[in-house]
Length: 431
Ligand code: PLP
Image (cartoon, rainbow, N blue to C red):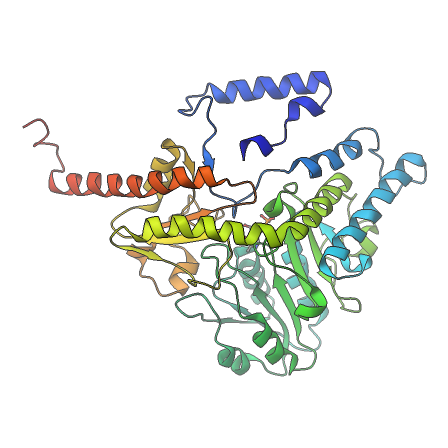
């Protein structure tokens, strides 16, 4: 993957490039144990590197064609043309119309706009909002916020794999329901929701809108909004090698949505603020490529992921979390009992592997993962969670290395923990 990282040095003017290299050199000497060797990146669910094609498409819009798309002069017109094309390209990749796409400042903003925009617009019709217990915090916290204003939030439980029970969804739907917000695939355990059945049941209730958080699914699962039959769908560019801080919300034509940003008339009055043209272009290019490459990427990653899974499963007391088959292709998540996930991630980092305990957003928090808790794992077990997520740029050679490093690191950490438990004061050391 290292070779595929954007080589900033070749593409920027000399003075900027020099600063970039100076920054890199400083970072490299700041105590890293991997000088001259980039760690193996197995945290693609947290974010991905910007791909070269997206970066190259963005550069002109950050330099020569820097205009504001609302300006009437040539600079503005060139920026407008690029933004219009980004709408067209992204829409085409989703089976949508260009006007149904709103570019946002990331996945979280797209989700906030979908949920709050639809809830406030639908307040006269009802106040019930339905979701699942394993959603991303962008969904859960938006809903919690709305609860303070009189909306009723129903949070549906999931099974051991993180899947909703369609019967429970049926039971929750009533004539006060405005919206059901679900995720296509889970960020922590990789489980893909059985959407077709869920959507069919929601559609039996007239007037209930469906929002899909497709942030994790987008790089690996084909998305066609008409086929999925959803009204709103949120994406984040940085999960498919687009730029960070850029997202998009698909809003089915005719859906009434109250804007959550007030100001100018950008994005057809639905998202005020000067548009991030370069971000939108980078996102559209990255998505188009990811979508075209899915038939090749997804099975390749599933094969590599399974190698890693088999190596971890060979260890005692390691349990795969999430669905064993209906899961994202590059996603591996486990609970390694008798280990601490945070300590494991630190040790893996020292051993040259970048991994995570679960959601990037909850890392550093002392709270147990709400996803693993919803799947029924007791708190002490959730502490041993480890997530390894592959991406398009992951190589066979990297996985071959990870297959030996990860199990070895888990075993070493367990042995050290046991030794400490038996001899907490180190009295036997050297005896
Ligand atoms: N939804 C899911 C499932 C995610 O995994 C994430 C990010 O990790 C988000 C939403 C938020 O996206 P962003 O980081 O672009 O705000």
